[in-house]
Amino acid sequence: MRTLIQSELTTLLTNASVIELDGLGPKVLKLSDGSFIKLFRKRPLFSRETLKPYAKRFAENSERLKQLGFSSPKIIGVYWLVDPINKTAVHYWPLPGQTLRQTLGSSDAERRQQLIELFGELLAKLHTNGVYFRSVHLGNVLVQPDGQLGLIDLADMRISRFALSLRKRQRNLKHMQRYSEDQQWLFKEHLDALQEGYSRVAKGQTAKLFS
Image (cartoon, rainbow, N blue to C red; front, side, top):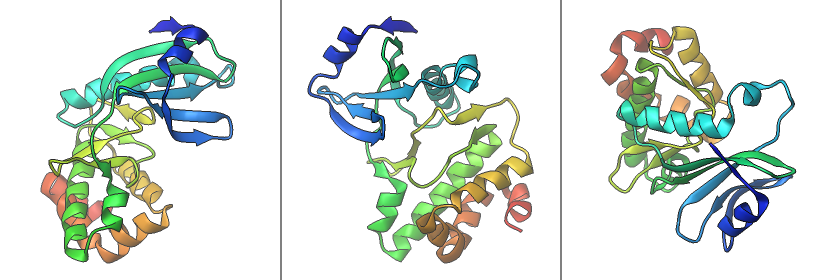
């Protein structure tokens, strides 16, 4: 990581468009060349950010996911910021496509069934490869132009050498049920598709996970 002073950040963000913001201002911006900058806020002194900056987590997770065979953004740079609000930033080329939630919202029932099977397969691959994506939901999975699924929002993720425990897999499913559309599509209308996709990769875990 290198330090990016305020003037450098200002220059980098010239003509950028805001993709995501909160009460403190922009969080994700699209730059004039099509690349993205994700800003991470300053945190209390004793936090997970102190142990390892979220921008660095994002970059490392992206590279590790590629090694495991998943689609993830290409990292351009990781920075410390001299800024009153933001502490770190990650600069990357985003994956093309739209979120799975958006795609499902514009698809008929048959297409939803196919996409949710793919999502079940992706989820099982993550779990089997030790990827604990704590905030996984249909808004941070992308449907790419080639039909494959990719991942975004990578800072909220841990990757271990061992497959996830049943408890962590269950927590992942529970988190997704917090979103009304996700719950309706995944656990009511197309639960069979989710289970079918998951069982292609982790058949032995499916019955226990969805019981």
